[in-house]
Every structure is written in structure tokens, then in C-alpha cells.
Amino acid sequence: MQLNRYALKLGYFGYRYHGFVSNGNKKSILNEIILAFEKYGFDIEQLNIQIASRTDKGVHAISQVIAITTDLPIYLGRLNKYLPDDIWFWALKKVDLSFNPRKEALYREYIYLYPHSNEDVDLVRKALGLLIGTHNFYYLSKHYDIEINYTRTIDSADFIVQDDFFIFKIRAKSFLWQQVRRMLSAVILVGKKVYSLEELKLILNGLVQKYPSIQPLPPEGLILADIGYSFSFDHSKQIINDVCRKLSKRIIQLMLKKEVIRTISDFMKIVSE
Image (cartoon, rainbow, N blue to C red):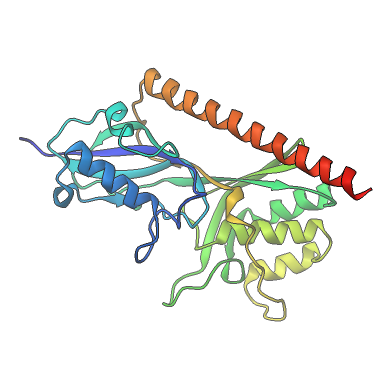
């Protein structure tokens, strides 16, 4: 049969996993996907699996992209039955056999949810604006064991305040390891008046060494929201509805868990009085 290559979009919750790809025997999202591929009947050696982005432990995704080559037809509904509920495929596109999802991505967009407290909103907005453009992110990324270019260009950076959260949205063609979480950590530190806007400018120039390493924000708030290509993906309404039903069940479970914690906390406060 004829070989075809497909780009598949998937979403996942990263809570239970040691990243999209992990070393050793640690639980990874890719390992779960490969198990599902085997159950589906794919020839794993034939697939030539390539991914668009490596997300860290605890990071989530709405639109991660993986490419595979196969002579079998792909039915996402059937494929999803072989996956745990916290991983799901929801769109696909037939592409050239040479397609590489990492190299051919036009942009990557991340969302970060941060529970704000006493940050100065105006300073946060100004600090976020400083990220836009081309900078040396040596001091705002995790360093590699090899020599690389730490210069990256941020295309857009924005945020809204919703309930008790800052919801950040950052877009660029590519990001360094932990860059998004460390950039936003620096923005929050400016909002808390630990650093000034002028100090952030120096850090973005990559020319100063007097500042301590800026630690990344927790991974649990980070979502890989979108990866753009020169084409649009195909998806069925039924697949989207199936995913939404599963997500609605998860929301109800989390609401119940929240109320259980609140009830226990209230009881303990009464006991302590």
C-alpha cells in the first residue's frame, strides 16, 4: 500500500507525566502515544515519528503536533480509544513525506495562567512589553550543555486579568528551554518591584552577571496553545464534541475536589478556634 505522511494535533494534561519525552523509564506522553499506535496496528518502525515541541514535566498542550508516516488510514476517534483520558488527538492533515513539524512551524504560542496577588498591574504590562522584539535570553532560559545562540525574537506578548489570574499569551517562532516560564517569572518580579524595568532591560541584553538566576514559574500553569503552519488542519465536529464531553467531566471532578478541600479546611478552622 502507498505510504502517506500525516500531521496530527493533540492535546494533553501534563500533570502525570515527566514531559512529552522523558529519559529512562519515566512516564512520558510520547510513550503513551506509541503504545496507542501499537494497539491501533501501526508499524512503529515505519512511522518516522517527529514532534513539533518538547514540553517539560507538568506542562499541558492544546495543539501539540506530531507527524507520522503510514500506509494505514487514520481514524482519530478509534485512536483516542487507546489513549488515557488526559491525552487526545483532535485534528490531522495529510502532508508531504518530507514534512518536519518542528522545522516547518511558523510560530508557537503559549498561554500561562498565574494566580496574582499583590503585583502592580501597570508594571506587569510594561515589563511584558519589553519582551517583544529580538533579545539575548541567556539569563532567561535554562542553559544547554552545548554552545547555542540564545537570541530569540518575541512576536507578541499580552495578558488579561481574569478573576484571580493573570492570563499571559506569548508568541514566537521558537523558544529556548524554559524561556517562557523564566521570562514571565522576570515580569512577575518586576510587578512585585523586586526588579525595575531598567534592570529587566539589562537582563534582556544578556550583558549583566550581577543578578541571580531567575527561576522559572511552575510548569503546571503553562499550556502549549498553538503551533502555526502554512496549512490548516482538518477536524470533525464529532471528535471535538467527544473531547469536550470528557473535559466537562474533568471540570466537574475538579469542582468536587475543590469543595471537599474547602469543607475540610473550614472544619479544621472551626476546630482550632
